[in-house]
Amino acid sequence: MIDLYTAPTPNGWKVAIALEEMALPYTPHVLNLSEGRQHEDWFKRLNPNSRIPVIVDREADDLTIFETGAIMLYLAEKSGKFMPTDLKGRYAVMQWLMFQMSAIGPMQGQAVVFERYFPEDVPQARQRYHNETRRLYEVLDSHLAGHEWLADSYSIADMANWAWIRSHKWARVPTEGLPHLERWMAAMAARPGCRRGVEVPPSPGKAELVSKGGAAITTR
Image (cartoon, rainbow, N blue to C red; front, side, top):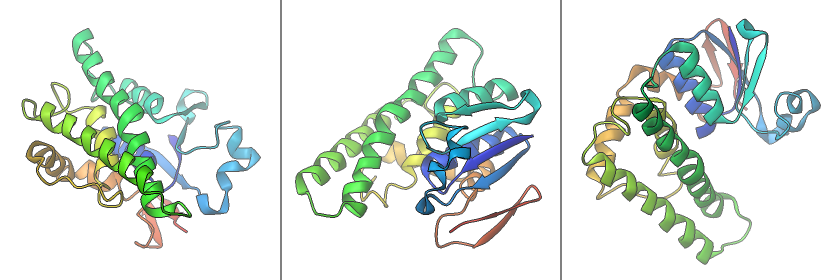
């Protein structure tokens, strides 16, 4: 059994998606980030950087892993799913996984901050992160024009990128005019494992209480 420490954010959802797609048993534990639980000593012992998600694999001597890229690579290896074993295929997946971690996540994350949360309006910053996020979407659209999935087959790279891009409206970055990206997004949204994963936990404002695998999880 895997313990998943998470919250309703793209990074939290991408690990839940992987767990659902891989059919790995897990128990979610939801942290209320607005209360600062991620800064409590017990959680910092799991992740000294005070960020979700974190997994603890009880079947592997309580192996604890933070950073979503490391978590998803571990889950793919544990399950034997969604990561090719040949060298070319493996690195095709890893490069698009790193693309999400180094580009989509940071740029779209900053776009959300300056659109939604920054205490004052900084038009130059809003434009900077909006334009860069859109440019990254265009990179994906161009690639997907010749590929069904980001790598040769469906993989953890698709899960990671979709978990972020599906919330593009919250960042106020449009996907109009990017038909290949939108085709891929629709294919991702149609997968039952993806649909289940983004409800663990549900977005703020959805159901207050969700039951998953016998464990009750609550949102703020």
